[in-house]
Length: 136
Image (cartoon, rainbow, N blue to C red; front, side):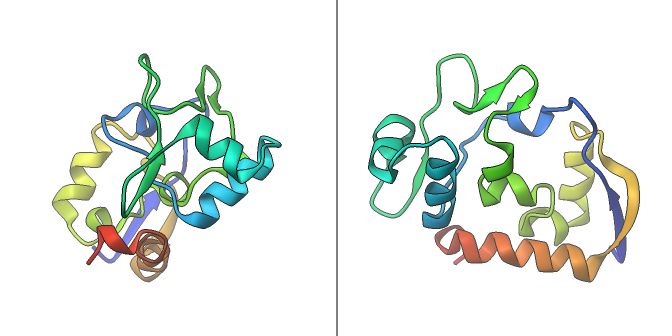
């Protein structure tokens, strides 16, 4: 891939409805806790499942993310790096087949301004830095 097109489509939450987890960096937790006016400790106790090497949002029984609301992301200005960088994840921008598969559920892929692959790779690198344990 040399260049791609992407722009989020108004009202679309398809990326948020995919099976999986929303992983969090330390900075993601700090930013989201501040946004919802909770201490980091209270935010973690209420919303986060922590393993030895990772932290992720707890999944409510009826959705993939506790902040997914009818109109979209309830913490949009403070959303985690994983969400903010989608679809420019290393595993998607480095493999054209993966990008094409993602376009099946993401109506924003193929629309909007042309994005040079170098810019897409810069965003992917932000994802790598935020979650190094996932990209070792």
